[in-house]
Amino acid sequence: MEVEIWPRTWFVLEQNRDTEQLRIDKSRFTQYLTLNLYESAEEPEEIHHRFLSNLRLDFDVGKDHSPDANEESPHSFELLYAYYQADRLWNTLDLRLGRQVLMDYYNQSAMDGLWFQLRRNWFFGVDAYVGLEVKKDYSGERKGLWLPNPPNRQDDGILESRHVGALFGGSLFLDNLKDTDLRVGYKGGYDGEQQKMLFTATARQRLFQDIWEIYGLAAYDMIFERMQDLSIGTSVQAAGFSADLGHNHHAPRFDADSLFNFFDVTLHNELYANLAYDLDALTRFRAGYHHYTHTTSDPFTTRWGDGGNADDELFLNASRRLFASWDIRAGYQFNTGWSGERHEINLGTGAFVWERYLKLDGYFACAWYKKLTYIDLLETDINQNVAWTLAGQAEIFFRPDITLRINGDVSANQLMERQFSLFTLLAVHGWFGG
Image (cartoon, rainbow, N blue to C red; front, side, top):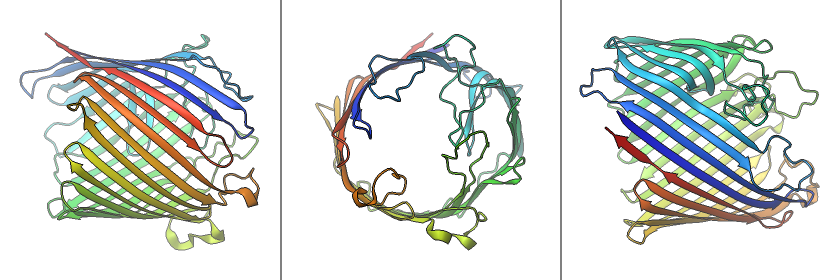
């Protein structure tokens, strides 16, 4: 049996001013504790047992002077996950039982329940799950005692129903194929108010010894009867070069339970092309072009850009490692179109010092923008500005398993005074075996 203990202590100080020039002071203390138990088998084909858990204690130790200060409880205790896992039962079954996080290509969900997978030396496998969805305030009437992981919000910005709800689903996938991935599945759920029914499919094919890859992802909403997510693309890599080209589509889910339409309900489409080149092991270049649209049309490119609702983004990045312990970075990004015009440059550097017991890192970013559409409260003639940020980080390695990290940044623009934040993290990672 091996025991892994990993406490992480976070402390944040922040001061800024809101749009009404009211000062906001924030000081938060957060304590994570990861506790894992492992039973490792001597032979790979033997059964493996483990217990994995993560707790979080979070509370506010400062004061917020803003009139829209958060009125919720200033402290909370949360059980992020805690589950038992067994692998290779009867050389066929893997399972997880308890509070866990389900993750796939599309999203993640917290669940109290059972997940299992059947696969062993076949050409296909099956997995399935069933349980109760974890939500904020699920623990009941005790204010400040939140066992699930908050905040739990929909993509469209609406707070989810707090009724206890069920989650269930599963998938069928190809197995033991080196260059081909294929998975089809179903995701469902119901909490008495909202229902989820989603059909999902993912495919990936690699060709010519992993030089060329073609992939596609799809999620069809069976309640709204429309494609919720769709991604198709291809990538090539050889001789230090890599390139990828693709298309993404996402349809936000509108629950129609708000009096005001403060959130975007239009379709989001994106075309992207990225290029990377490694001159050698020390020098890297990255470039890319993205085209976004927000439209009520179909998810493909036939009607993109109608009504001037398109955005274009271009970025260029370069990095160079001068010595074994020192690197420099530079980048440029340009945005134009429906959401305004923006230019940004950033410069950064990092180095190990003091016999690699200390790592220093910092960057400077400066942006010029005009006519940003999402700042609709500002007058057009002053909606043009220069903003800058200066940030630094120091990471101290007392031992391989004890690390202290300190982050600080200061930023300002024409409309707001300088604001700063200070962030510290103490991590202690211990292993005990017997």
